[in-house]
Image 1: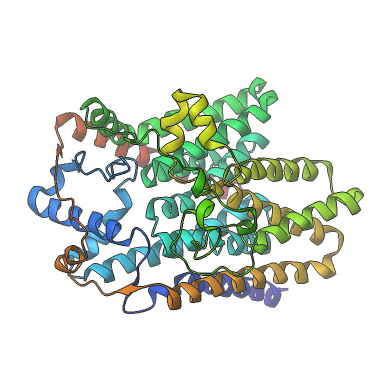
Image 2 (image 1 turned 90 degrees about the vertical axis):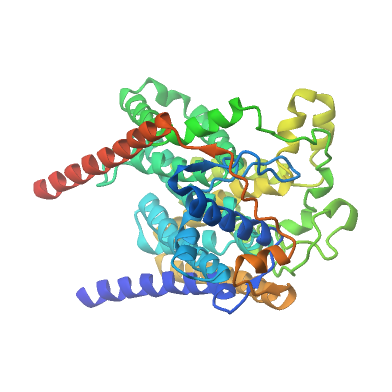
Length: 486
């Protein structure tokens, strides 16, 4: 038994390492793949480095640095996690080495967080590994990371599994059972997404509201309300300084949601065929309505997600008696909510017509920039659906479950590995060693500093830090007491 247990741990460890390596292949080079926003992201890092050198820690916002779409990097794309690359730059690493180092850490922690989250939800290590594989190597995430260099959304993807764990345990009423309470993970996840990207935070909050609306009966339970209250209070305390800077930024009058309220986004919607292709090709085009999928950016969900949806529907229709009532309910919620967001990403969804018909929504709709950003939700929900089907197969047909799980694992690595290799071979590359290399490629440094820390900001930072440390101490004390009782 001990040998089998050790073998299981080794399998999980090797699986996680394989995921880290596959998702990080373009970073194990001496160059950077030129994604759509690569120079923009490098400029953000360099702006922070120059700003700190000039102003020290008194710098906290850059309200005047707004790109043509009207998005400030100070808050809509948070700078918090960029300080990893900033620290490496200030230690003497080159621009590309610092940026690659940060992305490597993002990949490592995405795999670890996804594995922890999925195995905690499904109470099974192999299910956790399968979920992490499908989620971390998802076509959408790989395209964002290397094809788009959409750092904000990639960072949000890192933290979203923690939100799902928190919501899952909140709805089940098991927020206090684990050593790390579910409401702490929910707060941590929401905080991470907020600091990563405002759009992803809004999408996550909308999905959270939908989940709470579906579980409206839970609102009568005191434990549910208590956990929800703890989450709300801790989130506000942890982020009071960040929210203050955002409020100050809006109040200053320099905030611009989107100066192109009449911008059409319909043509950036996906063709149906792009959703579930097996092997995606690198391409620069995002106008899918005018150019079809000729030279299209490799954006979609991938054939693995389609296989998971089909597997669930097959079990539901053919082996309905083998699927428990709660599994059917969970699976249908995951499928329906994921399908709704998926449909919203398509070219045929009438976003432009809605914007014209309801002018009040025009600014919000066009601030999305492209409907395909909604694939963030089905990428996560369909990953969970694959985990659910694996659990059903494992319970009813244990001897075949390993083939199903291994098959999904290999399929997702094969498809994502093909895309990553294609991006390496098909996209331009660049070697950036200094600030001058970034500027020489036409990327402005954006080192205009227009926000400075005052007494209020310092006090609120102390409150945020004290709240976070206080929560950590409380969790550690409760965990120690549970160990002593056990």
